[in-house]
Image 1 (tube, rainbow, N blue to C red):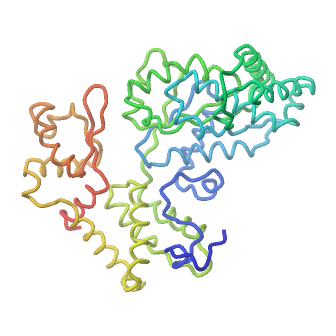
Image 2 (image 1 turned 45 degrees about the vertical axis):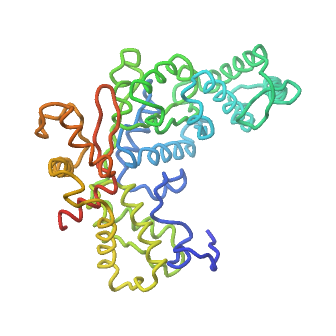
Image 3 (image 1 turned 90 degrees about the vertical axis):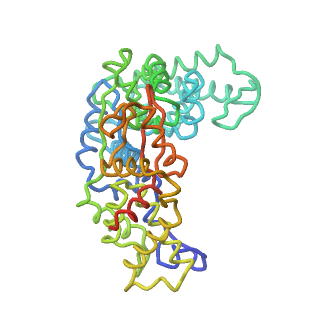
Length: 421
């Protein structure tokens, strides 16, 4: 937690060893201490992960906290010992999922190697679950041969370059690992290896995500001993949840924005955890509650603006006074909004009326909802939305069929200025 006192940044200036306004998902250990207002979601996910045969899929808007919830549940389960040698392990898929999820065969192959590397570091656990030394040594030796230059295996996961793998040896190795998993996690409540697939929306349209999950259903989702958690936005998973092939495989858990009454505690806990002695938070609890309401309860957007403001205070020392921090913050927000396009001649009046309607609703708008917005068809709606899209006040998200309109961070700032809050 040490920060170089000579570091030329706002963290050292205001007394923090790490940003309390970071927009990145909380790591497992951080989340265990800092997750606020999510006790119900954590409890439900834990129950579904450990007692249901279906795969839980966390569904919520970007930045709402799905990944943090999944990380905390995985972390807590990995630390639990309830009966006998029950144990849960966490498998880190960060290195392979984003690159290879669109190619299920490659994803499955790399997944097996990640499982192997994980289990080979758990020799005592494997022994408790009935894996003999002879079995362990055979897998260890075969794995070493498979990833060595001698067999010229191209295993990108561990950085070995070369030719093609030996499919016969590899098939035998994977068969042995499935047998290990079946033996280790065959009994009820015997634990498992927790795998999280995050940001499903990054893998294409809703239909493309559906195709990926349908393929994984009969491959990696069928590997014994693996406990999966999926995370995605509503738009990215709507086809999957309606898929006949995935019926009975997925269990939806909706994650909503944190209630405004919990926000002060959320930011207070972050400030305390990441601060050094006598820290001076650029945005305190009250100010954070204010910006959270301005951006319509979008936590990631609120945190991002707080980091920008902290950097602004550091860059312009004359604005660092604690006494005028709230006024300075609100003036800074208006200044940021002024730099954005909000003049009537730049955007037609019909587009402004659409913008006001969307911000008043405070939620995503589907193109099929054109009637409630006062348009005769989807084409008219898009024509009105196009100037707002080009000025980045709203964004268009493709889906099948149609599209979704969503207010951007810049859009919420312009809305703040125009509404004279």
